[in-house]
Length: 550
Image: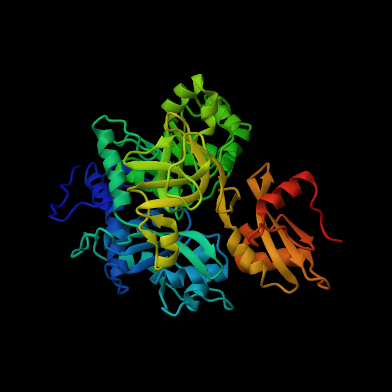
């Protein structure tokens, strides 16, 4: 059955593009999560109901809506519904602890927070600390316990009572209006929120159009191709840039989106096989866990055509192993919250070019279309020569507007339209980008390669009794790529218990920030300008020259 999409004189958004697909062949699958399977018609009507339900909470175009969600079909739909009614999506990832989460809600000026029932208590705590007093909504009923009762409006129940027609009177977003905000660390109590305009989504729609016309531009890492023939698995967190891009790209191309609630190698392998997944995106630890599963053998996933690997540095040998198991389907992508697309290496290109140049397995590809990359020296606007290491700077449609409500840090990161990424790397003669370090000291760890922000951790450590100085580093870890390790310079007569330090970190910042090891020192090495010299600290620890204080 084909239902004609309503005519509109307003400029098309990416949601309009999705709805064009969902008005065609209503009985075709659109969204899948385990036993939950929605057709295009059901997804469209559910989306409209959620849009009306959000409006009934008093939300108006331009208002911020915090999304504190798990990986599920309803999470995809409510994110689309926020944009459908002209509001701003504020992603609230699960890793921040209570203090940072509350600061994130406050700084983003969220008028409402939509939570998964699993996170209801944490969401209620964060919303309760905000002077803006956002309304708390939940995707389903919250389990009430006498001691920790959470009062939240069941958004799904409200949606069931709402019309299943599209909400009207939604103005098109302004050219420089923030429509999506992503958490990207910061300092304790003062998070950085990367704000993006509709241009990011226009780039996704343009990529879909080019794909439909048979063109193969160097666009964002191609997870899904136009035509609705792909079945895409969203395995990373939907509230992170990688999961968000994967889901949106699948939907704007008319593909079926299959949502993986939690990653576990055996379960992921089963879903990949049973759902006949053709394309997905993994962070490196996910890919490695899949490769290490005893059932992951050549030929096990004959339908799989594309795996994009990104989110952290990948091991060249492991990428080659993946190519041996799955075939020439491995591609790479590089981006960050401030620029969700910077460089990409398509699977076919990587397979063919690396045959002649094996070192390209270490590259994250060339600049995507409509994007420029330059390597610059510290505090310099002059591009460095080929193969010279410097800071990766980028300009293009996927670069953020700036940090939300933070002009000072925006000015530090954006100069004349160029984003200073904080990552160090170099370009070869053919424009391939090679990353060598992360100048921003982000520690990428955990089963889903989440970010631990060193500055947030260090700021908290300095609040503990007896701690004079602190440094957090990512140290090599076989399972997760990196593990958190902290170094504390303690007062002479202080009795600092490393186990107590770890417990305090977990209580305030969450499990992801829990240090694998805490090293007590008399002092930390410093640079000439008095900053902690993490390079010297890392080198000394690697050489065994740094030891725990007695």
